[in-house]
Amino acid sequence: MEQASIRRIRWKRWLCVVGTFLLLAASQSMAASISWSVSVFDGPLGGCGHWVDRPGYGRCWYPAYVSSNWYPYCEGYWMWTDQGWYWVSTEQWAWATYHYGRWMYDSYYGWVWTPDTEWGPSWVSWREGGGYCGWAPLPPGAVFGVNGEVVYRNGPVPDRFFMFVEIGHFGEPIHRNLVIVNKTTIINRTVNITKITRVNGRVINNGPKVNEIQRVSARKLTDPVPRAALERRTNAPVSESAPKETRPATAQEPRQPVNEEKRPTAEPAPRRESTPPSQQAPPRVNQPPERDRGEPSPAKSNPSANRPDRPDTAKQPPNPPPNRPRPEQKKEEPKKSEQSGN
Image 1 (cartoon, rainbow, N blue to C red):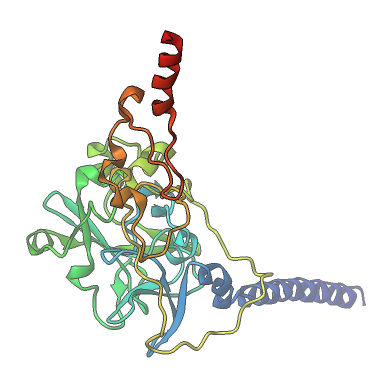
Image 2: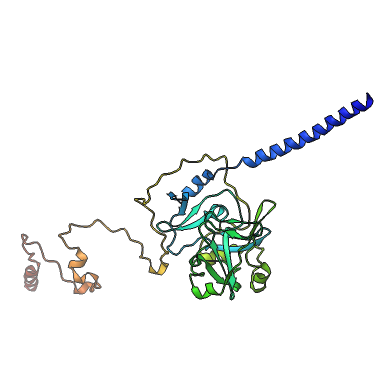
């Protein structure tokens, strides 16, 4: 009897332990299955761009008021972190479009972004060699294996999408007018070094070796670029200074998808470069109300209006009105002189 009771007690304890592990695993799987939707990007990105439907990709987003030579990952700088190369950008949509989703080039809209929910320090492909280092946005559907190799859905990234800088300038702030794009001689001297891995659920974007970049870089690659230097280089306010994983607010009410036409009737004009102050037109001074267009202005009809006034002694007395007789003061003076003589 005692051995049977001991066995029953051991059996119950074993069942409790197994049940605890099963409940823990179930709770973890449920927590993993609860994920936020890409619809949370609608509101924040809708204020600085447009959502469109593209065949084969669904809802995509593209920025408004950018120049014709604009590229993703061309306004900001690279920073080395424990998750590899992190892209710090000065653009207001950087928190979403450079750390979630992918970029592709559309023949009509240009560069468009496809949303996703997985965060990464940057989603780019790398090339290096011949004293140059380059990167290009990863397209939608690009996945990576255990060893870091990237598998593309519709072929590798075209060579014309890579932006290159000299290795010595890799650590400096990047601007679209400073990168080299679509130059065959540089592309032929470089090789693909893309290696993206996942460690403990965290995405690691390795890219070029940080030791080699640091050896020829004047800036410490693990520190942010000073705000003043970045604004002077890119001529834009700094919106992000340190790597951080930013998620959209899940409590925000998602907006309904916007079904736009393939060719929208009204699109914002591309951003134009600002005119130097020396070439800007002077401010308009408030002018008096214009006269009748048939009557010339006094300044135009009188060419001597701008001449300096003559001395008062040279001014002629004004002519009297035509209907009033001339005064006879000069004729009366001789009579007085005659009377005084007599």
